[in-house]
Every structure is written in C-alpha cells, then in structure tokens.
Image (cartoon, rainbow, N blue to C red; front, side, top):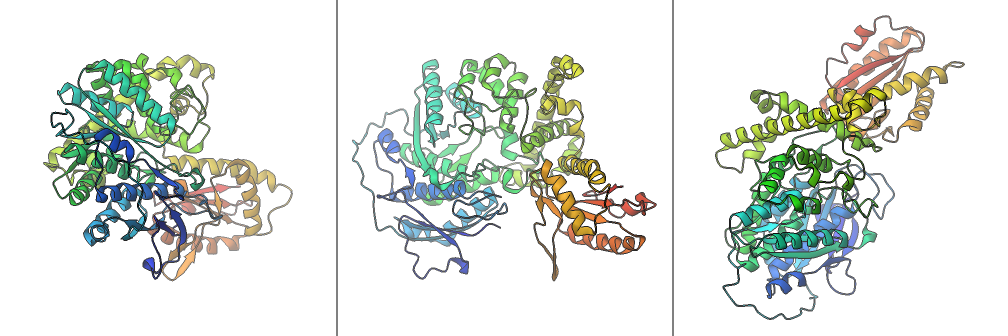
Length: 622
C-alpha cells in the first residue's frame, strides 16, 4: 500500500485529529480563496439555471472534486508528487473537509456510503472527517427564471454527456422518445470542452427537439501530478448530474454506457483491482442513487439504459436514428489529451479505441469513423508499449473465448462478476441471461471483424510487411491463444536461454547471488517491467521475497542454481516450501533452473510438483 495521504480541504483544522492513528503525508487543497488549487466553476450551473445551488449540494460537488483531485494526484505504482519511493497499486486516503452542512456529512450512514462507493470504484481505502466551513466564497447574484413552462423543468432524467459514442446515442434515444435532453459534461481541459461543444452544436442543428448542454469546469493545479486511471471520475461526474437534476426537478441521472464496459469482465491478466474500471457498474449506480436520495431527501435514481447493449448495438442505434454524420465529432479514446496530435482524436492503441473501431466496422459505418483520425491503425499499426501489446492480445483472446463459450461455461467462468452485477437489478435470473447473451454477441462480432481484417491484410502478412507488434500480426502468430502472463514468462525464459550460456561460457558463476547479478544484467537490458527482490510476502510468522517480480502480470521469478548433485535436494525442498507460500497467496511463479552440468537427469519429474499448479512453471537452462 502507498504512503497514506491526509488531505486538508478548505481550511480544515487538524488539531487533535488522529485520523485512524496512521501517520500521513499532509496535502492542502482549496476550492475557495487566494490559495485555490482545485477549480470548481459552480457559476456554470447557476448561469444556466439562474439559481444558486443549496449549501449541501455545493458540499457534494466540492467533496467529489477533492476526491477526484486526490485520485489524479496520487500516482499508482509510481512516484507521488512529493515523494521519491516507488509505491504499490492500492492507496490510503483520509479526507478532512470543511463543509457548510457538517451535521449531515458526519452522519455515519452518509460517511459509510461515501467510503463504500469509493472503495468499490478504486480499491483504495478512504476515511472522512468533516467540520464547519469558516470561509465562504463570494456569490454572484443571478436573475431568477420562474417560468414553469420552460421545457427543461420536470424532465425525467438528466443525462451525462462525455462526448463519446455512447452518450451521443443516449441523447439521440431521448430525442426520438420526444423528450428534451438536459446534457451535463465535465470540462477538465479546454480541448475536451471544445469537442463537446462542437458535438452539441451539431446535435442541436440536426434535430429540432429543445435541448440544453451544461458544461462545468472542474480541474486541479497541474503541479499536483497526474494518475491516468482516475477511477473516482464517475463520482464527480454523477455529482455534477445530481446538482443539475435538483435544479430542473428531475427524478434522476442517466449514464449511457454499453454493458460490456459497465460490467468490465476480466479481459487481461493485468486488468486487476482498480485497473478494471467499475465507473458505471450496476452496483455503483445503485449506491449513487442511495447516497443522492439521502442528500436530496427524496427518491432519486441513477441508471444506465444501455446496460444490456454492446458497443456495436450502440453504434447501430446512432445509425438508425440518423446520426451517422455526428460520429466523427465524438471521441472515445482513454488517452485523449495525453498525446500530442492536434488533428487526431484517437490513439488507436487503447482498449476504448479498439472497441470503437470494431463497433464502427461491425455496424457498417466505417466511413463515418475515419481511419485517419487514429494516430496508430487499430489493426495494423505498431504497439510500442508493453501494456498496449498485452491489452490487444488479451482483447482478442477474451472476445474469441466469449464467442465459443456455452451459456453454462460462461456462467461458471464469470459467476462472481455476473452475480454481483445482477444484485441491484430486478428479475436477476433474466438479467444474468441477458448479460451472457450480450457478451456472446460481443465476442462473435469481434471475431467476424478480425476475420475480415485478416483477409484484408493477408498479402501484407504473407510478405512480412505487417508491423510485428500490430494486433493482426500478433493474432496471426496465435499470441492470443495463451495467457498474457505465460507469454511474458516465455519471453523471460527466452532471454535467459539466449544470454546466460554465453555470459557464463568462460567462467561459471561462483554462487547463486553471482548468478542473479548476471541474469539481472541480461534482463534489465531487455525489460523495464521486472523489479529486483520485491515485494516482501508475509506467510505465517515468516517473510520471503522473489528474485524478480512483474507486478502488472502478478508474476514472480525465482532463479535456482544447480552446481553439484548435492544442491538438488535442498533446492527441491526450498521450491516445495515456496509452492505452498506463493500458491496460498495466489501468485504466479516462473522457476528458472540453471543446470549447466546436466545434473538433473529427469526434468519432467523435477517439474511435475511445480506444474501441478496452473499458475506455476518450471524452465531449465543448460
């Protein structure tokens, strides 16, 4: 777990505060006054709806903004802005916030719901303390708009509008139903704001239905650093929607996101914990609704009307509603704003870009999603980052697996995820069946598009002209038929098999530590994912650590050196002990045995107790 953080917000006085008795790194955050480093533009809401929001709702928005800022600024598995240590994935946050309604926010039911939502979203630990706000920001008066015939009062749902394909489809669906869309956007940067504005203007000019767009600026001081996962973003996003919904007397907020992304079944071995986003998971949306009902003191729902739709279903809906020309104005890329191109909106290598491009082709609107808008071609372009390579391979593996699984096989493989997803829904058995059908439909769709692309690029594959790190080249090479961690373990083995015999040709290593130094040099020259002798694992009253670890893969590497026949028995006993310790903790382990004298006469017998566990391999180097 990373170094615990203590966020002191809007002048909270920490005197006498123990904050769970944990020593924490303090960080001061302000949304008001001269020290402002978290920018919240509530005026955007007030200018549109010509009224001030309540103090409790202002509190909600500021709490969400502080949480979002802490999430963005505390880098996972990397360096915190104010520290030097490399830190693991999970984090521990304590928020001490001065608010306008401390009596409400200090209720254990309210704090409990806050903690539960955020811990499920991010897999981080949260605690909250609230005191009364002593400094208030100046408020600019606005003319009260009192015409109850205004078309945006009493709408059924306020809609979250990210500017992506799903939110566009949601707006079109609302228009087709004869309702007036109230679209709410979070504007963290100017470029994203410009795109959302252009899409809304085109939407407004294409359809006659009254509609309104409410963009709200919330961002932080850039000096606070950037963490790309941002798993608490939907808390901030839904808080914005709730404030607008309260202003227009709506009975809830709708997120429009396809069910494949909402459930986010495990796609890759490294898509674990908070890397597997839960931003619109059914449980999260239900808990949002419960929290906001407490805040507003009336029934309030947060839902996802697209929960049983695939991305292809969503794009097909846009086409049916006459919105094909608007597709090119949407942006789906998870890296938007992080790469330098000013003319292209999509990186082409993230999972969202893969989803988008495959859905556009499957829905028959490929020309409306220009290939030139992608920095790297989704299918044939290079993938230079290890994570993006693994994601492409894992995406193909997951989709082809889904298309071939029977209903019973899928229900068994994803029992935990499906059971959790249907928990807040009515008719759970029927919902589970629909989720299974949706995923099989998604898998079949992806498989058909990939077959089409492989045929299209068959000549390049035959001539060897296709970029070897591209999705198609890796698929043609059947990389998707084995697990990502196994591919990675295979690569580590190949590097050591190629380098170790040459490095030790003239002189054998003196001992195992000497051998580790040689191997470390070989591996570091080729790979920056491996970390030496990290992390420590506590098992019972003892602790141990691997020779190397690749935490993205949850893979540990152990090196063993057979110098004489006398080494075989103690090494076998040490491996047997490690199998129990590592296996109990769910670790994948690659055992590399260096045996230059061919002293192990039966490698299969030596490896058999190791490879009884599907997560452990033994490989030998002579």
